[in-house]
Length: 138
Image (cartoon, rainbow, N blue to C red):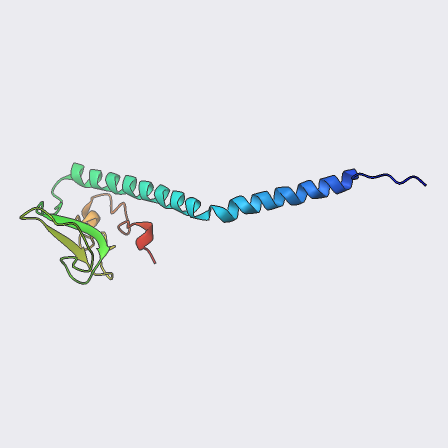
């Protein structure tokens, strides 16, 4: 009997399959945060595009209130209308922040974080609710 040393083709294929599975698992396990960040960024871009289109429709129609220029409308829920619950930057004199409570801040009828009554657009409100940052959603 001859004693041959070496690996058979089946053994090499099994090792290659195990290595590729481990490599794939390593890539997936080590970088899920980046995937989440990218999906949140895509959602932000989509939400801003939709909001821009809705505001464009409201502007073209005319006669719709777009808010007070001395106020900064913030898409963060806070029971205090001045947003004191957040450490927001100081605004120039004459400017102030506006926050809405969590029960109202997503409304698109002018009572949400954005004071534009999108439901008054003749073709109907293009947004059923106002968008917010994906990190703010529960």
